[in-house]
Length: 417
Image (cartoon, rainbow, N blue to C red; front, side, top):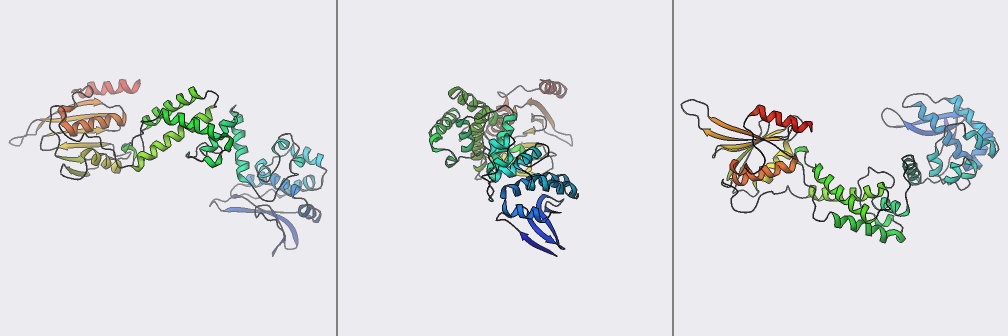
């Protein structure tokens, strides 16, 4: 039978229970293989209970020393009860100076103490008892997270100035650099907000008019990596030039914000239309009916009298169908006897023109020419040109190679560069 003997307002601080007549400290720490919290117990004495009742600081110090033992137990192991019991007297019953000395020779969880109000400077100097004089039962996990973030920065040799810190708080990346940034002016000290907004304005002006387009080759929410890198480089350069005192972390968080917002705008908009509204392009005529196919044999038809443009419908088709094992897409104009085949796996494209129709059971004769493609932007240009003017309209876009072996050598040279 288990009875609660002593508990604090915070449910996470270890409780004292009586189980089968024996006093024990009970705490939750770590997780099992199913990610459920694990519970550990180990025996304590009446003298230990008296200190735990009266001295929050000692209670928290004991907790911080037991946590590494719980971590060592892993998802299924047993708590080393002997090691846990060996912590009781030195932490709960010793003089403050002896407790400080003891903590210099054991593992302990600094974050728990910081979350409960420990003085960080005193902790860093090894004065754990003095550091816990202002301890609170309530926990502030954000305080511990910020401490960990600053410690990781210090290990990289980065020290934040007031404006650096304010920019990271504005974007919500002070604690976690991988967090998607957003605008949080309320998180910034009002005295620094004007200066923060001046930096943000510099970034906005630098990337005004730039876009991060969708990359349908990689799915519905993917965006063009090159567009992202181009915008990030532009913003970085402008911010560093206008605000040279900022550390790298602060500059990166601003460019990350600009790029993330631009990418979100692209994802939330309909698939971009790459076509010009009217007229013809090059020597060919604007297409009136096209067939789109993928490498799995799925086909989609498009006609000019429909509500959507050919390029928008095609790229939505790619967005829906593209996958690691489905990287070849074709656009065919059956009436004109021509088409293009996009090879996403090789960053290349083939244009195919019917030279002679098959007659009397003979196979048709085709002319196939290949071209290297420079990223999704290159693909968009070629698809748009073909839709507007057919294969003839592709002459001005890139170099076309009829010999497959020669083209393969050109592709390998490009990939080797």
